[in-house]
Length: 235
Image (cartoon, rainbow, N blue to C red; front, side):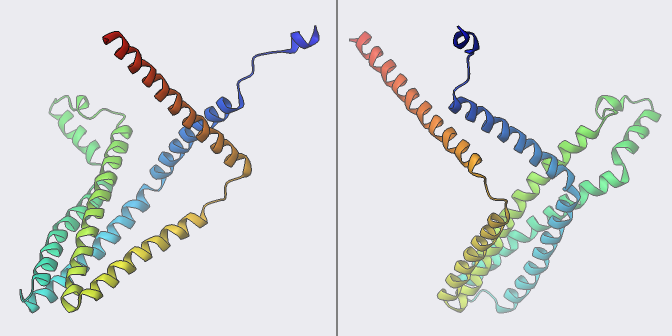
C-alpha cells in the first residue's frame, strides 16, 4: 500500500536532460546579450581601432601600387580590391563613431526638446523612454559594422595576395596559408581559455543529442508511414 501511495509521475531522465539543456541555452543566450550590452563601449572602441588600422594599411599599399603602375594583371586586381575596401573602411569607421557620439551629445533629447518647443508631437517618433531605442540602434550598428569589417578584411586579404602574387605565385600562397594558420591558432587559444565542461554537463549533452536523433528518426518514420498511406489511398 505504501509503495502505491508513494508512487508519483516522474519525468524520464532524457526529457529532464533536454529541458535542462534548453533552459541553459536560453539563459546562456540571455547572458551573452547582457554581456554584449555591458561591453558595448569597448566593442565600439576596438572596432574603430581595427578599421582605422585597415584604412592606414590600404592607403599605404595603394600608394605603393600606384607608383608601380598597371604592369601586370595581379597589380590591377590588388589595386581594385584595395580601392574597394577603402570606402568600406571609412563607412565602418563613420558608423562606429557616430552612435557613441550621438549618445554622448544627447541628440535624441535635444531633438525632442527642439520639436516640442514649436509644438510638434515628437514623442510619437521618439518616446520618452528611449533606452530601448538606443539598445536597438546599438545592436543594429554593431551587426552592420561586423559585416562591413568582414567584407573589408576579405577584400584587403585578396588585395594582399594579388600584390604578393605579382612577386611570385608561391609567395601569395604562403601568405594565404599563414593567414589561415594564424586564424586557427587564435580560435584554438580562445577555445582553450574557456572553462572545461564537467562530466555531468557532458552526460546531459550526450542524452540531449541522443534524444534529438531519436526524435528525428521517429519523425522520418511518421512521414514515411503518412506517405505510404497516401499512396495506398491514391491506388
